[in-house]
Image: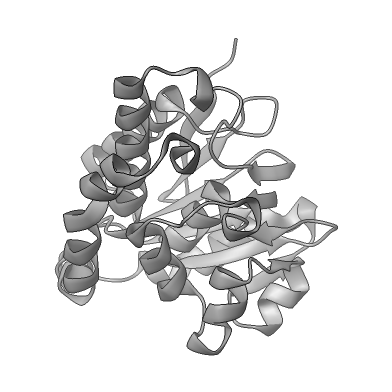
Length: 236
């Protein structure tokens, strides 16, 4: 079976590609593989990182078929890993661009929001925080990521009303930075990354950490308690 997450470097930009052959469902192996790719990027220090998915599917979020089968300790471990890796992307010391290659639902949307910029493939795809619509309470860290990427005017619509956006609707609202033809998505993502790659990495990393410190500390302080305090259904 091919690796569900691969890493390669082109023109000083690292491509982290999510492709499990299905919907890029998230569970512990996904988070471990994403962390390994991020570890490699931190070690090799490319000028920027592009995170993309398979054609038609960036990620459908958490594996909702698997989670109900997990024992409580494993479920809590999975949910902690989920929040921690998303916050890691959000605070990553190298500029990041999400190449949203198709549907980005729930955790998939959160991963795109964690990146510095977003370019989405044009097509019949959804960018969708669907948690409220399916009866789940969003964790603080996820709300914080959404608020960082979605202009204030659209917070209620996107977060509380669980509005799904087509790529061009997301562009009109300023939730994404560009829409690209699917066959040009990675090239356009690299074009977005190019000016970011010219930044001084030390200054970028330090300024990013300070810029986001208060929101991240607020979210991290609630991560474990919110998981422990939710009913099993909400954890799924």
